[in-house]
Image 1: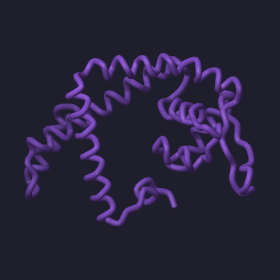
Image 2: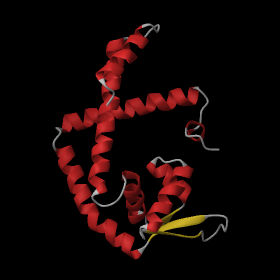
Image 3: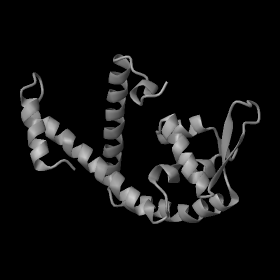
Length: 178
């Protein structure tokens, strides 16, 4: 979370900008800070398994994929990583013995990613705990709070997606890939 000094500096700077209400900006900074805290808590929790959040999501995606494999590009899109970050993350999972790269069945320029038997056992053994924790977290909110949170996130995503499209940036441009 940015320090109070940083927040005050941001708000002081923004107060000089036309059309910005600092009270709304402050709430935006608070939301970003809360989001980061949630990310940090999830990362800390998953570190008990020796995984990052993205590594766990990759393994989860592969575990639940009917074909049992995905391309690195599909995985990158699914978990929100750049392709270069995906390469490094897959390298780490491969070193842990959780995934293996295999030639793509119909395109020899590509590879597919598969869970190893030990990777499947590992993530399959941890998923019940993951889903129980998510259930308890969401059950801590009322149905109305869950709906409001979902609608609010969807609205922010819709706005940011439209604004990014308006600026003519693709996801690859924003994440520095070509």
